[in-house]
Image (cartoon, rainbow, N blue to C red; front, side, top):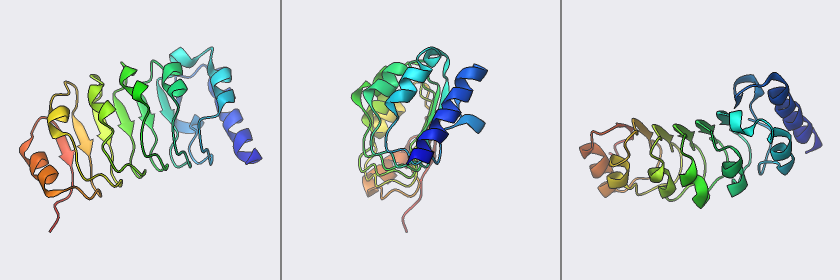
Length: 178
Protein backbone atom coordinates (compact mmCIF):
# COMPACT_ATOMS: atom_id res chain seq x y z
CA UNK A 1 0.00 0.00 0.00
CA UNK A 2 2.80 2.44 0.84
CA UNK A 3 4.30 1.86 -2.60
CA UNK A 4 0.95 2.75 -4.20
CA UNK A 5 0.75 6.02 -2.24
CA UNK A 6 4.30 6.94 -3.24
CA UNK A 7 3.50 6.14 -6.87
CA UNK A 8 0.40 8.35 -6.80
CA UNK A 9 2.30 11.19 -5.11
CA UNK A 10 5.07 11.02 -7.69
CA UNK A 11 2.62 11.14 -10.61
CA UNK A 12 0.58 13.98 -9.12
CA UNK A 13 3.64 16.07 -8.27
CA UNK A 14 4.98 15.63 -11.81
CA UNK A 15 1.63 16.85 -13.18
CA UNK A 16 1.76 19.96 -10.98
CA UNK A 17 5.43 20.69 -11.71
CA UNK A 18 4.97 20.33 -15.45
CA UNK A 19 1.78 22.39 -15.43
CA UNK A 20 -0.05 19.71 -17.41
CA UNK A 21 -3.79 19.67 -17.99
CA UNK A 22 -4.21 15.95 -17.43
CA UNK A 23 -3.60 13.07 -15.14
CA UNK A 24 -3.46 10.89 -18.22
CA UNK A 25 -0.89 9.56 -20.67
CA UNK A 26 2.34 8.97 -18.73
CA UNK A 27 1.08 10.75 -15.61
CA UNK A 28 -2.15 8.86 -15.06
CA UNK A 29 -3.25 7.13 -11.88
CA UNK A 30 -3.96 3.74 -13.44
CA UNK A 31 -2.87 0.54 -11.75
CA UNK A 32 -2.15 2.27 -8.43
CA UNK A 33 -4.32 -0.08 -6.35
CA UNK A 34 -6.45 2.89 -5.28
CA UNK A 35 -9.66 2.09 -3.41
CA UNK A 36 -10.63 5.78 -3.42
CA UNK A 37 -9.23 9.07 -4.70
CA UNK A 38 -6.70 10.10 -2.01
CA UNK A 39 -7.64 13.24 -0.03
CA UNK A 40 -4.01 14.36 -0.10
CA UNK A 41 -4.17 14.58 -3.88
CA UNK A 42 -6.94 17.20 -3.64
CA UNK A 43 -4.60 19.37 -1.58
CA UNK A 44 -1.62 18.92 -3.91
CA UNK A 45 -3.71 19.66 -7.00
CA UNK A 46 -5.71 22.55 -5.50
CA UNK A 47 -3.62 25.16 -7.31
CA UNK A 48 -4.04 23.50 -10.71
CA UNK A 49 -7.38 21.65 -10.39
CA UNK A 50 -9.10 24.22 -12.63
CA UNK A 51 -6.59 23.34 -15.37
CA UNK A 52 -7.04 19.56 -15.21
CA UNK A 53 -9.00 18.40 -18.27
CA UNK A 54 -8.30 14.63 -18.35
CA UNK A 55 -8.06 12.13 -15.49
CA UNK A 56 -7.33 8.43 -15.85
CA UNK A 57 -8.03 6.26 -12.81
CA UNK A 58 -8.34 2.99 -14.71
CA UNK A 59 -7.59 -0.48 -13.37
CA UNK A 60 -7.66 0.38 -9.70
CA UNK A 61 -9.91 -1.03 -6.97
CA UNK A 62 -12.18 1.98 -6.52
CA UNK A 63 -15.60 1.17 -5.06
CA UNK A 64 -16.83 4.77 -5.05
CA UNK A 65 -15.87 8.19 -6.26
CA UNK A 66 -16.63 11.13 -3.98
CA UNK A 67 -18.62 14.28 -4.63
CA UNK A 68 -15.46 16.18 -3.67
CA UNK A 69 -13.74 14.74 -6.76
CA UNK A 70 -16.32 16.33 -9.08
CA UNK A 71 -16.50 19.62 -7.18
CA UNK A 72 -12.68 19.87 -7.36
CA UNK A 73 -12.20 19.03 -11.05
CA UNK A 74 -14.93 21.26 -12.49
CA UNK A 75 -13.26 21.71 -15.88
CA UNK A 76 -12.84 17.99 -16.55
CA UNK A 77 -13.41 16.94 -20.19
CA UNK A 78 -12.48 13.24 -20.06
CA UNK A 79 -12.70 10.76 -17.20
CA UNK A 80 -11.47 7.17 -17.45
CA UNK A 81 -12.63 4.93 -14.61
CA UNK A 82 -12.62 1.59 -16.43
CA UNK A 83 -11.55 -1.56 -14.61
CA UNK A 84 -12.66 -0.56 -11.11
CA UNK A 85 -15.48 -1.93 -8.93
CA UNK A 86 -17.85 1.05 -9.06
CA UNK A 87 -21.58 0.43 -8.64
CA UNK A 88 -22.84 4.03 -8.74
CA UNK A 89 -21.80 7.63 -9.29
CA UNK A 90 -22.52 10.61 -7.00
CA UNK A 91 -25.51 12.87 -7.73
CA UNK A 92 -23.29 15.88 -8.31
CA UNK A 93 -21.99 14.27 -11.52
CA UNK A 94 -24.65 16.19 -13.42
CA UNK A 95 -22.77 19.40 -12.54
CA UNK A 96 -19.89 18.42 -14.85
CA UNK A 97 -20.64 21.08 -17.46
CA UNK A 98 -17.63 20.31 -19.68
CA UNK A 99 -17.40 16.50 -19.58
CA UNK A 100 -17.36 15.02 -23.09
CA UNK A 101 -16.20 11.44 -22.45
CA UNK A 102 -16.58 8.96 -19.61
CA UNK A 103 -15.24 5.39 -19.58
CA UNK A 104 -16.96 3.16 -17.01
CA UNK A 105 -16.23 -0.17 -18.72
CA UNK A 106 -15.60 -3.27 -16.63
CA UNK A 107 -17.05 -2.02 -13.36
CA UNK A 108 -19.97 -3.41 -11.34
CA UNK A 109 -22.87 -1.22 -12.47
CA UNK A 110 -26.18 -3.11 -12.38
CA UNK A 111 -28.18 -0.02 -13.31
CA UNK A 112 -27.42 2.60 -15.93
CA UNK A 113 -26.08 5.73 -14.15
CA UNK A 114 -28.93 8.05 -15.20
CA UNK A 115 -27.11 11.17 -13.99
CA UNK A 116 -25.05 10.81 -17.18
CA UNK A 117 -28.12 11.72 -19.25
CA UNK A 118 -28.17 15.16 -17.59
CA UNK A 119 -24.72 16.16 -18.86
CA UNK A 120 -25.44 18.14 -22.03
CA UNK A 121 -21.83 18.08 -23.24
CA UNK A 122 -21.34 14.30 -22.99
CA UNK A 123 -20.39 12.80 -26.36
CA UNK A 124 -19.01 9.35 -25.43
CA UNK A 125 -20.18 6.84 -22.81
CA UNK A 126 -18.45 3.48 -22.39
CA UNK A 127 -20.29 1.02 -20.14
CA UNK A 128 -18.99 -2.19 -21.69
CA UNK A 129 -18.67 -5.21 -19.40
CA UNK A 130 -21.03 -4.24 -16.58
CA UNK A 131 -24.24 -5.93 -15.38
CA UNK A 132 -26.75 -3.48 -16.84
CA UNK A 133 -30.08 -4.88 -18.05
CA UNK A 134 -31.96 -1.68 -18.92
CA UNK A 135 -30.89 1.56 -20.56
CA UNK A 136 -32.94 4.81 -20.68
CA UNK A 137 -32.88 5.01 -24.48
CA UNK A 138 -35.36 7.92 -24.58
CA UNK A 139 -33.20 10.01 -22.23
CA UNK A 140 -30.05 9.11 -24.18
CA UNK A 141 -31.74 10.07 -27.45
CA UNK A 142 -32.52 13.49 -25.96
CA UNK A 143 -28.87 14.16 -25.12
CA UNK A 144 -27.75 16.93 -27.52
CA UNK A 145 -24.08 15.98 -27.86
CA UNK A 146 -24.13 12.17 -27.52
CA UNK A 147 -22.36 10.51 -30.47
CA UNK A 148 -21.26 7.11 -29.13
CA UNK A 149 -22.48 4.57 -26.57
CA UNK A 150 -20.83 1.22 -25.82
CA UNK A 151 -22.96 -1.26 -23.88
CA UNK A 152 -21.40 -4.48 -25.15
CA UNK A 153 -21.07 -7.42 -22.72
CA UNK A 154 -24.04 -6.32 -20.60
CA UNK A 155 -27.08 -8.60 -20.02
CA UNK A 156 -29.48 -6.17 -21.74
CA UNK A 157 -33.12 -7.22 -21.68
CA UNK A 158 -35.06 -7.73 -24.92
CA UNK A 159 -36.94 -4.40 -24.64
CA UNK A 160 -33.70 -2.47 -24.27
CA UNK A 161 -32.10 -4.33 -27.19
CA UNK A 162 -35.12 -3.53 -29.34
CA UNK A 163 -35.11 0.15 -28.33
CA UNK A 164 -31.39 0.42 -29.08
CA UNK A 165 -31.83 -0.95 -32.60
CA UNK A 166 -34.53 1.61 -33.38
CA UNK A 167 -32.58 4.71 -32.36
CA UNK A 168 -30.22 6.36 -34.81
CA UNK A 169 -29.27 9.52 -32.93
CA UNK A 170 -25.83 8.15 -31.97
CA UNK A 171 -23.56 5.19 -32.67
CA UNK A 172 -24.33 2.22 -30.44
CA UNK A 173 -22.06 -0.73 -29.75
CA UNK A 174 -24.07 -3.60 -28.31
CA UNK A 175 -24.45 -7.29 -28.97
CA UNK A 176 -27.38 -9.23 -30.24
CA UNK A 177 -28.38 -12.19 -28.10
CA UNK A 178 -28.91 -15.33 -30.20
